[in-house]
Length: 99
Image (cartoon, rainbow, N blue to C red; front, side, top):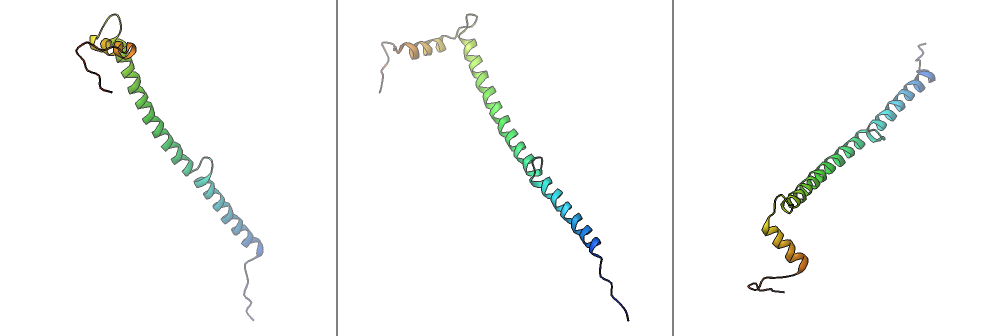
């Protein structure tokens, strides 16, 4: 009479618990607040913000250039003429306005 022994219930529960714990930590590593998907999302947001920063820095540089060109130390007559026309709405006698 050979008797087949089945695994004890304690060892089955132990391994089942370890598998569940491993699955939980795997899920947390991928989907959690500090997981892989969150990291990818933060990196993408960082790239978008760096692109926006570069655009804003270019706009600031353009505005600084215009400000310098209208300063007392450096006067760009073409830019001054353009600004005066925009603000005052005036034209020269030899120009034609098309609306």
